[in-house]
Each structure stands twice: as C-alpha cells, then as structure tokens.
Figure 1 (tube, rainbow, N blue to C red):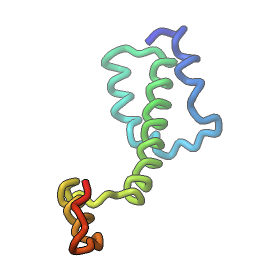
Figure 2: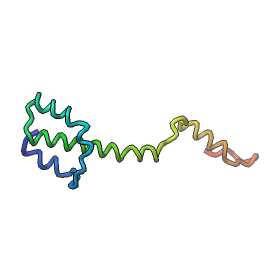
Figure 3: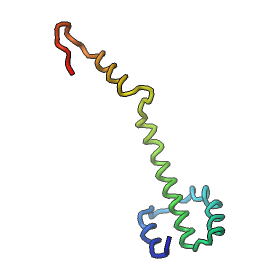
Length: 96
C-alpha cells in the first residue's frame, strides 16, 4: 500500500468516527506494524479498514437474523408441500 493509494482508500469510510471497535484490533495491528515496519499512514489506514469491516459486519448481522430462511426445507420439499396444499378437482387433468 503506497502513500499515493491511501487517500483514495480512506475516502469511502465514515466521516464521523466513533471508533470504539478500534480497540479490538489495535494491539494486533500494532505488533504487525512493528514487525513489518509500516508507515504511520499505512498503520492508520489498516486500523480504519478494520473498523469499517467491523461496522459492515455489525450491520449485516441483524439483516441475516431478520431474513433468516428455514434451512431445514429443501426446494423439493417446499414444492411437494405447495402441490399437496392446492385444491384439485377430482376429474381435472394434472397441471405442470
């Protein structure tokens, strides 16, 4: 990651920082930065990216819970349940 790329990578992230989740990865990122000799800009960029990913994951969790699909039924079982639930006249030809 070069210094030229950093401003464009930071641009899409939130403008009002609430960075409480930053503490979750701070120690690990600090150790990586020391070991890999990151610049201050690269260190900051990684922390901000971690926070952005954490927030995205946090927004996704409730959506997954609200939209939870019943995974115990296969499409075939649903089709059988739907076809058996239809009212069919005894003399009517089968439909496809």
